[in-house]
Image (cartoon, rainbow, N blue to C red; front, side, top):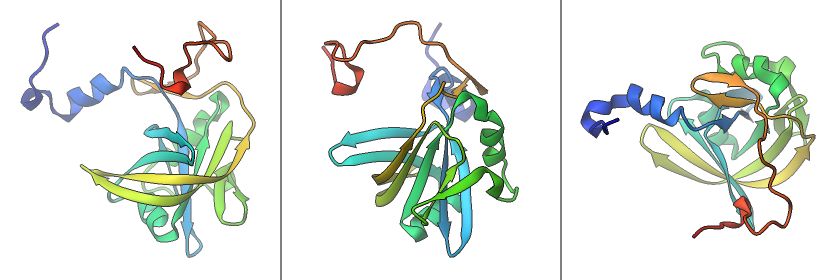
Length: 180
């Protein structure tokens, strides 16, 4: 396979390329002046353990970004394999907010009902990056139920099976910044 020059690649080729990276599936929600907003996304990452920080990438014109920016807070619900319908509902543009899928945490946060994990966040910084905004949030509350993850890969939702478990305390720890 020969590399494709950047100018010939375009956004479709780029999407196909990054589609090879399997990710978890989240729903980010926020509420401002009683108006809820939310969207399915896979552009989520943990950033820091001290302080507890996460990052999400939201499209410039999205209602969710507007609600996050105005309220100064957001919730990340990490979905489990049985929640593909919720992922599809929150991904639908122009549809009403699926209120039947959420519950309140600490009165100010909306979380997807039954999610594997929930992170309630206070916005610490928003950085413009191309056609998206990177939203950095400090985690102020969590819920953790666990479960098999919902995975997004090559444009499809599904589950995964771990081939190799890394034991706790193993010298090759992916969360400790191990490298060569």
